[in-house]
Image 1: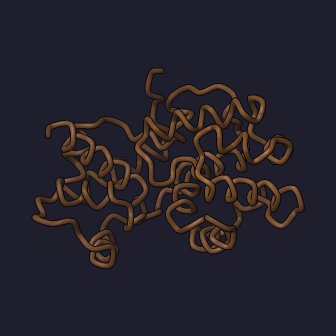
Image 2: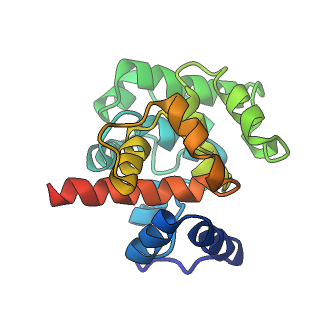
Length: 220
């Protein structure tokens, strides 16, 4: 699948980061346009679902897993619920079917909890746009098994928020250390302060730091 051309907003974000920070300028030149899209969208997966619920479920499937392993589990999850991820489809299949897809017991419980909360109207993911990033995260972490990282990924990749800064993410920390020549991984608290000059486009900066971490891993 060919990379999508950047929107005007994304192009402006890249230009602003490049002008503000020479390290970011180098990463942008090296890795091309930022592609803040869900993993299933990047892979062209059919049946993943376009709803907010489907996106949140996908984020749970990717928790603490490498991309290829998570993608395989997510694909089996989509198949297990009949090819379309909805609250009704998730609740209609037994827990054993979700476990057989490769989900852990805790992830199975989280995904069923999300579906049940949506089905009962305790959360409305389609009405969440009016909330600020911190408020979205605060609301989502009330759901069992949803931590700040998963909520932040939802803000970045589903809601398209451009100023999310996931300082606890290993890839962001590794990419920052690699790109800026640090001897050790920066602590989340230190990284929070270090990211201030990258406002209001820290989601975009994080995407380039992930690329830097991947390039370092590939180089051995």
